[in-house]
Image 1 (tube, helix red, strand yellow):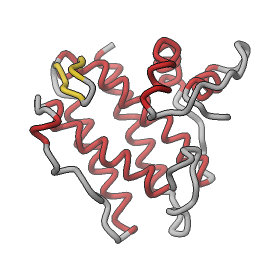
Image 2 (spheres, helix red, strand yellow):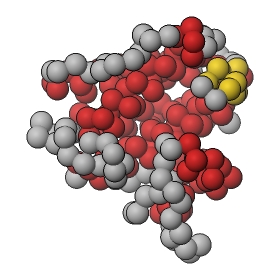
Image 3 (cartoon, one colour):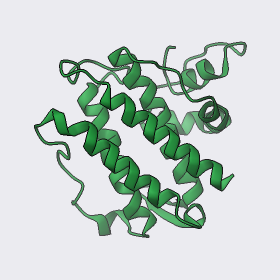
Length: 192
């Protein structure tokens, strides 16, 4: 399970980075399925999130990280954004793939959690926001089937908490007979 989680994190990170590389110069301010975010804001969210990963796996608390990741991490030169995102994904994945990383305790804003649970959350964010980004930019929006298989039971178990977190939309009933990827998207407030 641990090796699979780390591998899937890397795969989902590379997929998101590839989608960022496919964003057209004129698409950065287009809307996304995240109603309050344009493409640039969505990408910045994932860039910021991945920058936290190595620090949190080192054992730092939110307070210890302080304000070093606040503000605009992308700058004004859109030509650099895909590279920034890709390198941040690689650094985050290196931290996730360290021996025993998933057994560590990670200090998140809402409290301490296991490295394994934190990586589940990261995979969820990468997979769902990759779908958002693909939809917004007209790219292939297929979600990795292994990510769907991992995330669907997790999202079913935590649907109310996910909605309450504000990170995802309210669940949408897509019907029990819907394909697993559509059910997953419905649980996080997405219309497939």
